[in-house]
Amino acid sequence: MIYFVHISDLHFGEKLANSGRGLIPHQRPHNLAKCLGLPSGINLAIDEAEMPDNAVLRVIASGDLSVSGATQELAVAHAFLRSRVSISRLSAPYGAMGLDTPSDLLGAIPGNHDHWNGNRTTLKPYNGNIFDEQFRSTPWVKEWRSHNNDFDLDVFGIDTNSGWNPDLSPLLSRRRAGLLSLGRISDQEFKLLEQKLRRSVAKRTQTVRAIVCHHSISYRGGRSGKLELEAASRDRLLQLAAAYHVAVVLTGHTHDSHYHLEQHNDQSGNIWGIHELRCASTVGWPEKNEDESGFLFHRVTCDGTDWIWTVWRFGWDGSGYVSAPQPWQVFSGAF
Image 1: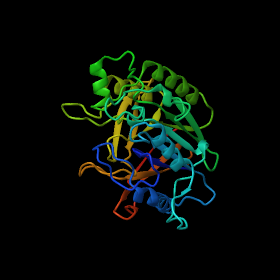
Image 2: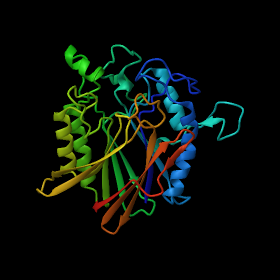
Image 3: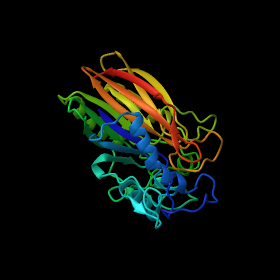
């Protein structure tokens, strides 16, 4: 069994104990009440999924950790993800916030907001300086062994803004990446990802594979195409996922949760299913009625030569994170 929490679009501001909604639409800092309530929501998910006391819990963050990619905002995000911080004299859980996740159990990739370099007007499409210090260089892979040592989950993190090189892209392309929040993956990112996927497939251990990226593979933004992953990048990513039997793509960006199944031919010509699981904005303020606040809780298990993936969806009800009593999605496949 492997268990992990999927969070996204945290949009942390410059102060951990943020006290307001913010004035700029689509650039609002995190909601303090949701941050304080998230650990309790995760504990509820652990009970729902019947996670053993001695099992390991991992965390995946699919981008937009910050409001604008400022160093202070990213420092606040890291403090929340990697530690447990007291913000008042009250004892935990009321006066403390944070997930206290060790680095080896955390996988985080940047979103478009994280590339802005603190500038909220020009909306820089790509900032390579955020890597190493703020994010692990992409593409990366986390090889997680199951609780019973009977299979691996290999999670590959990629940057769907890597194709927007500000030194090479024309002004129109920067506008599309900034104002329209479009995603584009670089050729180099694809080449390195394929190398890592090839090594994963060559392993002797039974392995299920997942990719985490910020932009959705199924979202379509109407006539303007806003928030989309560009078609060429999307098609290439799906072809690569099918070729190397990637079962799941974990995404965010659109501030709503969604499940989608893509089917493509693998290298043998057989149909391969790719399941997208899109996470809502976990601790953010809604901009419109369609926006959601919540997280996804995943359990991956092994049944002989098959894997089974179960997902619970948790949403904010005004005072805490709650879910339906039954799982949101359940699907399976062969190793």
